[in-house]
Amino acid sequence: MIDADFITELGNFTLHGTMKDEGIISIQGSNGAGKTTFLLSILGLYNITGTLRLGHMDVSRLPVNRRGAVYIDAETYLPHLDVNAHLTFSSRDKNEAKLLEIKRMFGIEHLSGRVGNLSLGQRLRVSVATAVLSSPKVLMLDEVFAHLSDAADFAVNVRRISKERGFDVIVASQEGFEIDDDHRYTIVNGIMHRHY
Image 1 (cartoon, rainbow, N blue to C red):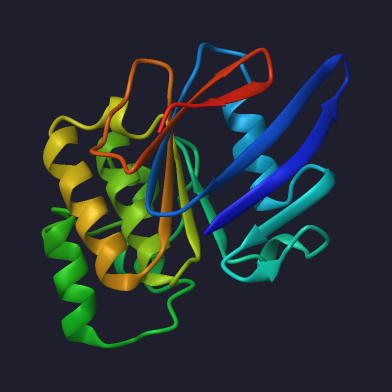
Image 2 (cartoon, helix red, strand yellow):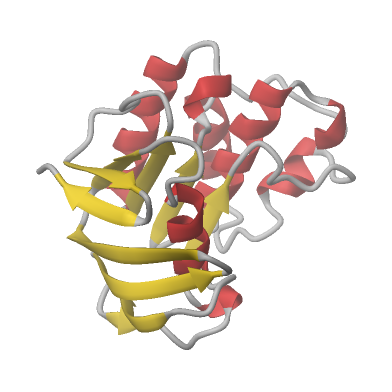
């Protein structure tokens, strides 16, 4: 459950972050509308005024590493690590069978070498798999599906693993809604609107 009721102020821009939902949540908005600001506020990179609960815990004042939130965009990866080291970097579960299952689910079982040498789509797959293995409370994907050749299949797997492992997912996009969502928001000029 993501229970957000906060304001983030960045220069002349004010975001009114309001959300009370769980499951798969889509946020759509144009460039500069506030999608990434909302996600990075949940992550803890911006100071907020108000409240933010993830699960049953108030994380409003907690540091990034104690919130249980993971943010992924095109630049979220550790380029110097090889694929397996990246996948287990923050994993709480070192079970090889589960690791192989996740690798197969995200189509990365054949990848090796340094993550920085992979294509953008491959890096995103490795980053999302790494995030899943870290057992997050919420996984936030910012413009991820736009860079994947088989985005529809990837979205199905994200949905499936989030239900199996019990974490929420927020998917931010400029170009419409990219996943079979449980709840949908649009954001315009820092104001969030819930559709369902």
